[in-house]
Length: 445
Image: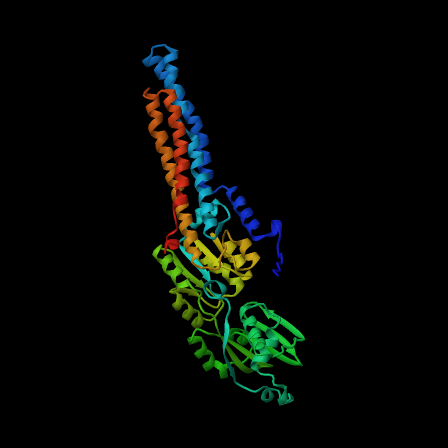
């Protein structure tokens, strides 16, 4: 027996959403297209002026008053001039580029996204869930003090440890580190009680109450903000951070109970993606709320030199703007709710498709697969498409620049001018369609 459960139907299905995004994107004109449209508008008037001037010159200087002979080169000028080629140059390339992107797992939300992605010089990666797996694992649990030593009234048979108390406090949090701690305790078959009070401090830690115990679980910076002395755990924290692990401190009252170490490994292909970006003269930057030592270790693993560590969710936008103020075009790559403002603030926001809906909605480019190497694919497609647009425009302008004077001096009969005009439009379209046979370099490897 085969049991099938429909989770989404009709317009809510993933395929329908992709089709909708592509259709909407094709309807948005990039800045280059808007400029070409204005030029084409002026071009039409210029051609009429040239045709009228041709008629006058032929009528008075060449045919000496024979209107029938003078009108032939003037008509040839009108026929051979082709604003159609200018108008087709951009949309045909964009259409093929969108199609090529969709077939390679990249959705561009408009031609403008392609145009801007072609110009970027800095790619900012959020660490957790983008460069790394986003699924940290508990690797170390270091007990500094027993709960009975901190709170003598607690019975020793309660069996409440650093790990179990951390899980109780973190149970209400959606942070990846919190989920990892809770999952680790559940995997050991332990029951996790509900806290009677819970408060999350974004990017830092949580405060909870359980059995009249005041619990605080979070980063060293969080504990310092809470005026808790962590000197007894500094050596442990330093060791964990040097190993690339994130240290989470657990306290009861104002006393440190223990430290939990978690490791989040880089995604497969992250190092390759960073290496290719460097070869494309695009500077990779890592952004994280984690501490400097852990961030440096992860950055070293993937080959990134410039990092911004200890950045709270509210500070991600400031980092993006800081780099933009250096005169650089910035792409922000992220997958979480906390990344959405930075995705919007960047010149191009690239949302990883495995992330949250709000991050995907904020991104101008969406990676359907959870493969960070598709960032490279997106940039390659954008550069190829913009390059094709420029190539098409060059063909269109050269065509008009050469054949309009030829028609004006009488070397092109109107019938032949008509064929040449049609050929120019066809050549631009065929040039764009030729991009269908092109494959991004990374996909060839």
